[in-house]
Every structure is written in structure tokens, then in C-alpha cells.
Image (cartoon, rainbow, N blue to C red; front, top):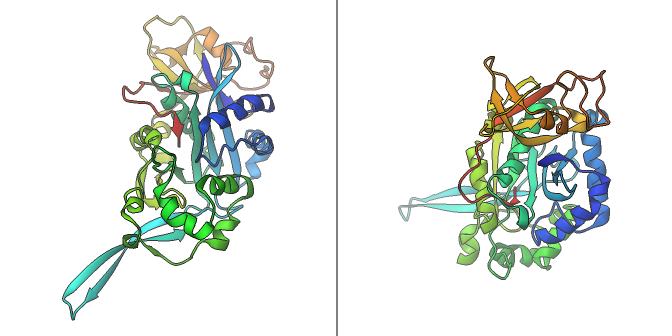
Length: 365
């Protein structure tokens, strides 16, 4: 079984290996042990009762191969973006000019640096190791975050957004960075990405012009990639759109990758998932798959399990899967030391899971 759970300190070596596998352009997963230790500590606080008081939090989860204990994928939620350090985007807008003398009206698109996503919740850091890129797993990693949003709605903002990596050529170069960002920063693309990840965004405020940039003045190569996702991010964008996310004209400051957004309660998985008691029993071999979360803040788990609705419309899962998810049926689970009779671990959230037939996202939002 593959299980999604919060990251922990013992995952550090696996997370460092994933950072090296990710490659360039993903600011949330730098190959730096100190950065990972800080992220793990922040995530442990988010998945705790004291974390309820925090406006800014990191909910970082990993996909674990339950048999081996190896971490093979990542997925995350970030709340209160822009509240502790500025969160910059470009907003594509249109300026309209009219000349009565020439009898002409001109529509010109510009890029304006904005902080419009301040306070929103961001989903990101989705990555799956190549050997685990099988149908449905990228979809599982992505949608598990929406189960978390539904399980703890008071902990997240009203708007959820996602940034996708911008397009790069075969040499890994970003045309927008080469023709725009590098002009103002004087460093290469990956240096800028690493600086953002490790030191924050102050250098952007220091060096980036505050005035609108006329898109028509950029070379065609740069114009063509504004709002265009990286080839590896295109499947993720399709999955986001299926959940209700929309592109509203915001792009990444460095590579021009698109940002998409949706009202939290309008995310399809949030809207369509159900809560009910955990009922364990015998499951037929051809039973459909369900995505199930246990709703336990400090022992959170999400898994894909076979299940069947009974005559009362309740989901029945196997005793083994209930134990792995630390869900009580008539007694505490047999495999988890954190469950006990005094806690209510009998409620689960679930939604039927139909793996998409198209190419699955393995890296990006």
C-alpha cells in the first residue's frame, strides 16, 4: 500500500534524495538539509493543536511505500502566503489607448508586479519518483491535499492557488528569465530560484522595477512562454482545472509559469467528499477504489483502499486497511501506538477514486 502522511525527521535522507531528483526550478524543495529540517519542524507544528493559532503554516506530506517505509513522493499545502515575506506575481492586464487624431484604438498588454495572493492558501511541492509514476498516483498525491482542506477547513484560507513551473527549452533555460529577469538581477535562473528558497524574496523588492512592463517590447521567445507551463507541468494543470481551478492572468515572476486559483469550498473533491463512521468487513475482489482520510490531526493519513457502500449508504473497508489508517471500528487499531480508547478515531472522509486515463502529473503544483 502507498500511504500519504505528514513528513517527519526520519524522512530527511529520502527528502534530500527527492530534492536532487526534482532538478531546477522548484523553489519549495531545495537540496539543503537545514531548509528541510525547518520545513519538517514547521509541518509538525501545523499538524498539531498549537498550530491552530498560526496564520502562516506548512503542511508537508509524503507518499510512503508502506511495505518498505521509503518516501517516494511529496505534496504540500502552504497557508497565509505573503504574510511573513512578500509573495510576488506578475498580473497580465490590458491598457487601452485612443487617439482621436489618428482615429485608432490600441490594446497593449503589460506585466505588473503585484501581491494579490497575500493571505491565500497555496498547494505545491508535488513530486513522484520516476519508478513510481503509475496511473493514478499523481492524481492521488494532488487530490489528497483537498481531503486535508476538507478535514480541517478552519485552518485554511478562502482561496486556494497553485503555481506551475514555466516552460523551459531542452537546455533547461527559461526564455522569460533570459530576456527579462536576468536583466535586472544579473544572476542565472537557478541562482534566483535558490535565493528565493533559502533567503526569501527581499532581493526581488530591491531590484525588480515597480512599473508595468510592456509585453510587446519583449522578444517573441519571451512573449510566447508567458502563462505557458513546463512540459512536465501540463498534466498537473489539467488535473487542477478538473478540480475547478482557473487561470486568471497571474504568472510567475521568474519563468512566467501560470498561477491558477479557486474558492476552497468549490474544489470538487472538497465539495463531493463524504464523512462517515469507519465500518470494516469483507470486501469483494472487484470493489471500487476510494480515497480515504482518517481526519486525525496529529496522526493524519490518506490512502487508496478498496471499498463498498452498504445498504445504508455507508462505506465498508477491510479490517487491514482500517488498521493501517488507524481507524477504530469496535476497538483501537492493532498497528498504531498513538490510538487509544479515549480518542474518537472512528470517523473517516471518503470519495470514490477513478484514476484518469491520460498522462499523470508527477512533478509541479
